[in-house]
Image (cartoon, rainbow, N blue to C red; front, side, top):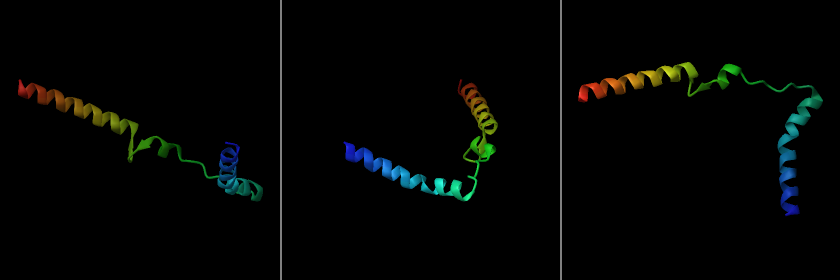
Length: 67
């Protein structure tokens, strides 16, 4: 178990090496664009809410037409 934990730590250290090297050299990490985080599949949350409302209206209309 100790070997497994040590191996995972070494892999993590190797993965973090570019970040450490960047801090030593003075390269600042790239920040994520906040608007990109708020989009899903190229659509914003408000776009998905509009799609949901359109689907609700469509289902209500379909239900009224069937009865």
